[in-house]
Image 1 (cartoon, helix red, strand yellow):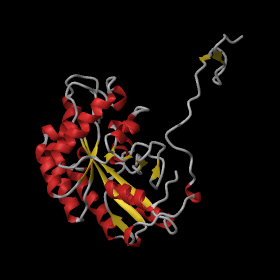
Image 2 (cartoon, rainbow, N blue to C red; image 1 turned 120 degrees about the vertical axis):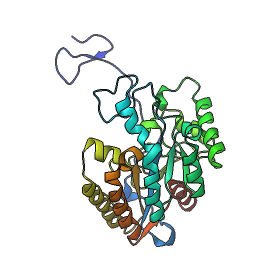
Image 3 (cartoon, one colour; image 1 turned 120 degrees about the horizontal axis):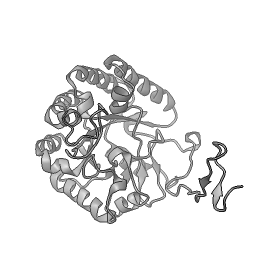
Length: 310
């Protein structure tokens, strides 16, 4: 017999689980893409393409994104920390040359700690008119780990980035794509108008938070997953990018799509991968019907040109 307040687990006998309240998703509704009004990008483009460039700082005394889990829990962890630290020291400068060659202005997913520790990166981005998004304080602290006053934390992040870059962020990506239930509304109070965390669509859409959008980002077209989790080769990476664009272009015959390429300097900026990034971006930049843009411009265009419906 089940105890009061418990329910029988579908896993079988002996595995009773406590009852829990079913929580509904109050942030957005279901909206099948085949039932929406068409989206039209500038100049008749069919696919809006942006690079989401993760520019991050990691704490030396906390486990973070790791290449080798054998030492990931150690403090310090030179093996994995050094891999991550290659990004701001070397790799990003190699990637900047590739972006410049193809006229790409990255949408920079910026930890506010970067502004204080790697000012040369901020200077390079300001000279190139990069778009700057808030990406938490550092990438060792998830948004769900933030202390009770999340508003103060987010205010400090946003104002630090604004002071360093000269632009108040319009968009947000949480470290490891994390949010609390309050994060979108708090960001809206601070003047931000879109998030990238909910990777569930090929088009922007309005959240139930007034003035707040979701703009597509990608966990699949993401170098961290492709190279470190799935072990794709450089040529495979180029083919993945081509296949993604070709399919989205075909899908966009009647309504525009968004293609986000998520990159981390310590991954794609490795010497043996850089030429494949160059090849992939060349294909995108030369493809007809592609708007090379930023996530800021995508959000602005969508908000301005579409009706106020989910």
